[in-house]
Amino acid sequence: MSAGVIVSGGTVRRSVLSPGVLVHTGALVEESVLMNDVEIGEGAVVRRTILDKNVKVPAGARIGVEPELDAERYTVSANGIVVIGKGQKVL
Image (tube, rainbow, N blue to C red; front, side):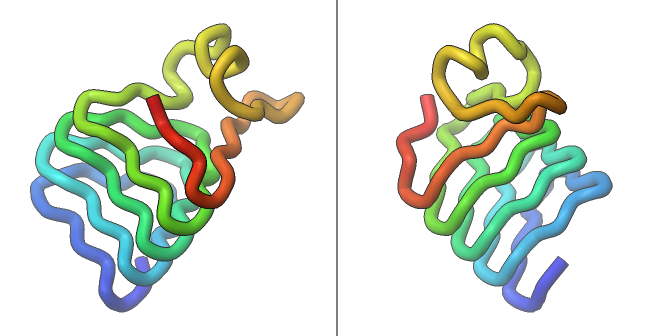
């Protein structure tokens, strides 16, 4: 975790968090890379994902949990890593 990261009641495991990241209550971040100023909403789940700068994940969102759904919405590597680009809208 970098300086300026706030994890407010959420859980972060085996991940890299850049400055300005905010993880809200009940959120889970696992095996992910979050770039500057990413925000993870309450109760959201983010697994095996790379989130570029300024991405906002809404409350209750699930990324990296359902591979078929992720492939329809986002870029997914051959190894199953979800990649969400700078400013991309997260559903």
